[in-house]
Length: 85
Image 1 (cartoon, rainbow, N blue to C red):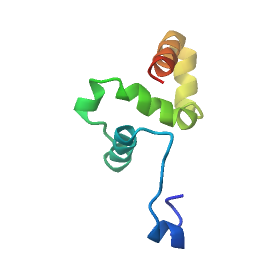
Image 2 (cartoon, rainbow, N blue to C red; image 1 turned 60 degrees about the vertical axis):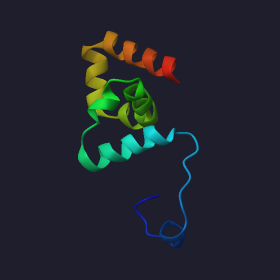
Image 3 (cartoon, one colour; image 1 turned 90 degrees about the vertical axis):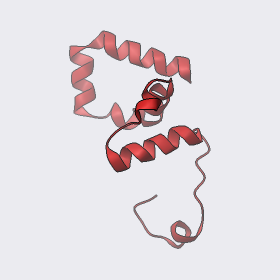
């Protein structure tokens, strides 16, 4: 959606309805800097951020390696995502 400079992209605001504004802001911050804000890491937002990005994260080889090497960590992470949903 953001990669193609269509007329709508250039002139109309984009509404993201299924993500909290602060969570989306943090995702944009991460995309542009490669880091999460330290203040956000002390809240439940890391799990909300992961929930938004989970389809992308779980499709990577890195996630498969973590699943294989640390299954309890994956289960704990997924439980936290569900709890904060």
